[in-house]
Length: 70
Ligand code: SF4
Image (cartoon, rainbow, N blue to C red; front, side, top):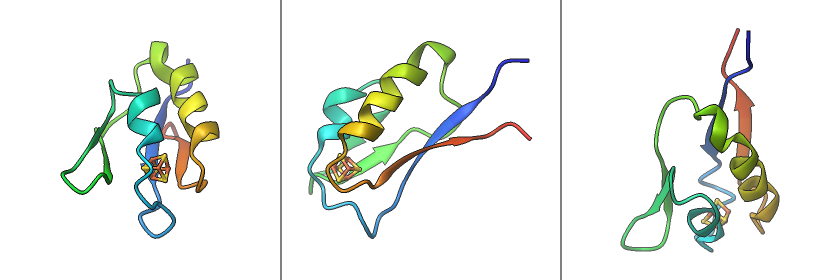
């Protein structure tokens, strides 16, 4: 069984740089103030490596990739 992952944002740590939306526009959009909203649910397998890049690229370490399978 393949692993499933989802993205979560720590809203306290996030300060709205928007790097995540640039690196993963398929799943992250910015609100009018520049803060991100992540599409809920598991990431498609083809986007996991892109999500990892977005996590590493977040300057505030506010973006996390978590396992969603039991
Ligand atoms: S890159 Fe990090 S700090 Fe910037 S908007 Fe995304 S989650 Fe927030």
